Image (cartoon, rainbow, N blue to C red):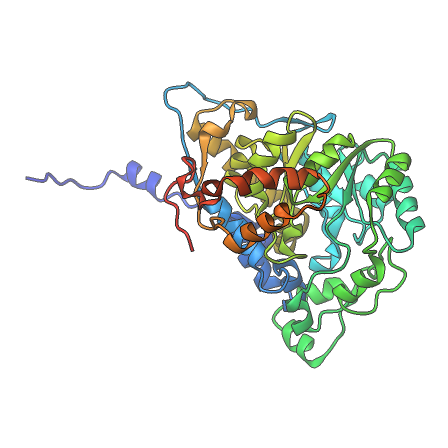
Length: 462
């Protein structure tokens, strides 16, 4: 029979201790955010629709972004046991320096539109956390001001090749003079992708006040007060800022960009150079042969070519081909520290976060970016401890299985066409791609769906 007693006053007093309230509303909001998804929810409430959709959206049907995020969800971890791992080391040697965590802040354009502190908040938070910050060519803070915000930390610069080449050359010289140690030469934006959300929202740079924007501003007065009472947006690389984002990009970018432009920039830039936007194994191999320091596997956050390759799926193939010759980095779709751990396990030297950083910025300025980094750090450390690895270098392919949803299927029509071409007496130029295609055509069995691969568990073909 259950024995009852009168409550002990001392024990009751211990149970009645109340948590000290957080008076600052921003701190209170951020304390309740336990995941990047929580920060996103706060950001959506506090940011007008047009700039939020610019951050959130991708190209056309947004399939590239959806698939990239799904790829991280379709991961199975394989933890070890009884390894005695009370603490973990998350530091990473990357591009000649040290990062306290295996991720940095990716370059994002028009950042002060999301929240007025913009790149200053990102650079300062990155410096405090000991991770790199990357400034975009289309950033809304100058190279010199970013350096001032992060004077002792690592600053990287992302470069677009503009129609007016001298603009790009001068930006590279300024970044080098300011002490930026790495340049990200971006190759996936010869023209702007179809950002349909921006067109539907009538989103322009700078934002235009219309009846719709006024109505949207009513529940979000803080954003508009900050926007209207701080210095106007300035772009280091754009002389004109009227029009949609796509129109601005199309007027500035050049579809004639080539390897010659890469060679010119390498002659200007004194530090490390990384090519961002690589989406095939073949291109990674070409860049390794040309001696670049690294590549970023990226489909530009899904904002350029829709239905582009999934960087996380491409990762192990590129690492296997060129991982011994240069560093392989990864972005697109990262929303959890476990995504970063899985990437490192499959060979990524480093990763970059874009939207995750911007959600934090929109949720709380500099403090929101700090919270983003804090959340991801905690998730990385917890995942490593659960896998029972003491350092990033202990992570390997044995810890991760990529589960399959989108499985390549055989293309009998294409295969037949290739065989017909091979049967012709004309000389076929022997490129690396044709050399790789011939064995596949000679052995039709190799073209069967990848469901037979042992690493593809619970495969579902569509």
